[in-house]
Length: 275
Image (tube, rainbow, N blue to C red; front, top):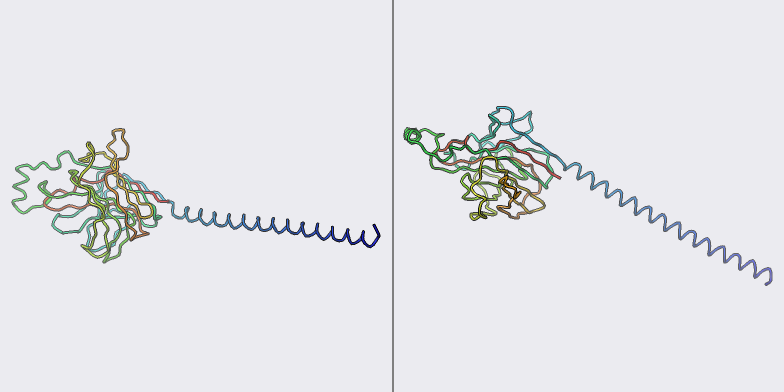
């Protein structure tokens, strides 16, 4: 091979090798950028999860009216009743004649996917109407155990102001006749039933003292469970879907109607979490 051809061959080989080296460099740079972008996205997702993750638990050790627990609980709505605590239980303070004035309290600053769970408190004398009680009601007195309605409620994605309360109510009747998912739309008395359940599997109803009542929301799906402490775990009692509200906190509520004692059906403990 002549010298000129030899030099040209070497130059071509060098150029090709250089191009291949640059190509590999660009591939490595592109791969590194992809890794860095992926790490950034994962960091952002992890930061959001960390921000949304929160837990709270209480067995109501203080006597408070309304419940506060050092400012943890919130209630701003002027048209609705407060929740009070005594003797390690939480109950409403309604008279039973105020219409849809459910007592409620909720925990702010939780993530959107939530779980709320409470241990039921149910007085063994609930629903037993004595002669003295009938006479008491005959005098126009309240807080006596006569005919009426009692509900405990777990709240999800709850928020309020002085004139508005909105979110999801998951309720349970004291006698097991119904369990419902209800959307509160804001103004007093403005609500929408999402699911009304009247039939249940054998052995679930009525709820008993010590049962675990739980509600969850993930995306737009709401599930409500009752655990009878019988080894069967959480049993689904009502479910529904609704995409209306995407934020707000978990909480608890109570509703009574008629001449009934509001202290006989409530919660002995409460816990909530979000992720």
